[in-house]
Amino acid sequence: MEDNFLNLPDNFRQDVLEKIFKAVDHSESLTLISPPGMGKTLLLQLISKKIKDAIYLDLNANFEAKTYVERVIILDHAENLTKPGYEKQSLYFKSIRESDRNRTSFIFAISGDVVLAGPLKTVMLENVIYLEPLNSADAMAFLQKMENLYKGKLTPAQKEEILSLSGRVPRIIKRLCKLFMDKIDAATDLKLQSDLEEIDIFLKNNPQMKWDIPLLVKKTAGQERVNQVEFKEALSKQEFLLGKLLIENKGKMVTREEMIEAVWKSKMYDVNEHALDQMLHRLRKKMENATPKCKLITYRGRGCKLEVI
Image 1: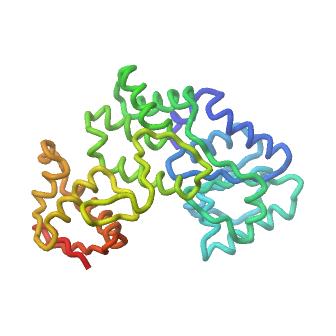
Image 2: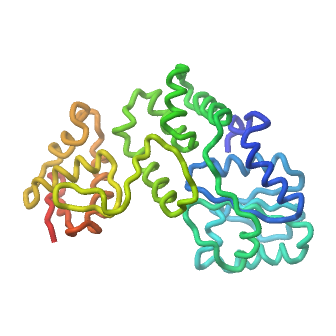
Image 3: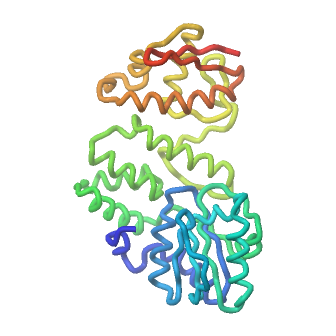
C-alpha cells in the first residue's frame, strides 16, 4: 500500500474502526466481509498503524510460520483459510489463539461470498462485520486521494456525480475517477461493468445488505429476455446489445465489425478488439445457462454464430 493512501483523515472509517477496537479491547476476534474492492486492505493497513502490538499478514503472499509476540494478528485475504489445502495454516493460527486466548485477537478480512468453515470457524464467527459503502465525508476523502494518484483534476460537479453514481463504493469511485479524467463514457467500459456484476452477485447472495448504487441495474433471475431467449443472469447494457444482434441473426455468422458497431456505435473505432473478446467470453457463459440453451461458435478472426441447442 502506497504511503499517500495512509495519509487520510484521522476519522476515516471511524464507524468501522470503533467496532474493531471494541472487539480487540475484549481480546475477541472478528471477520470483515465484503465484495472485492471495498478498501479492506487499506483499512487493515490503517488498523495496523493505530493498534499497538499488531502485525499485518497477507495470505496471498508467503508468510513465515513463527511465534508471533503481537497481541493482534491481521490476516488479509483470509478466504484462503476456508479453502482445501490450507488446513495446516488454519491449525497453525488456531494454535496461536489457543496458546494465549485471553490476549490474542485475530482480524480476518474476506473478499467475496465465502462460507466460513475449517478449524478457525468458531474464531471467525466471534464477531462478523459486513463492510458497507463509505459515508459522504470518507467517500470524498477517498476520491481526492484517487484524484492525486491519477495526477488529474476533477471539477466539483464531476466529484458529486462520481459519488452519486458509485453509491460511495471505493472500487467504483476509483474506476469512475479514472474514466472521468480520461473522458471515457462509463457505459462503454467493460472493467466497470465487470466490477458492477461482481458486486451485484455478492449483494444477491447477501440480501441483508441494502446498497444503493445507481449504476447497478438490479434484475431478478428469469426477467432478462432477449427476443425468445430468457437469461437467468443479468446482462449489462453492452451484453444485451450484443446478445440481441446474435439472436436476431441465429444460424448466421456475424462479423466482428458488425458486433463492435452494434455495441459501441459511433465509438467503434476507439474500441480495442480485446474488449469484444472479453464480452463474448462473459456472454457465452450466460447463454449456456439460458432457456433455450444457446451455443456460440467462433470463427477465429472473423466473427461468431449463435446456435440454439
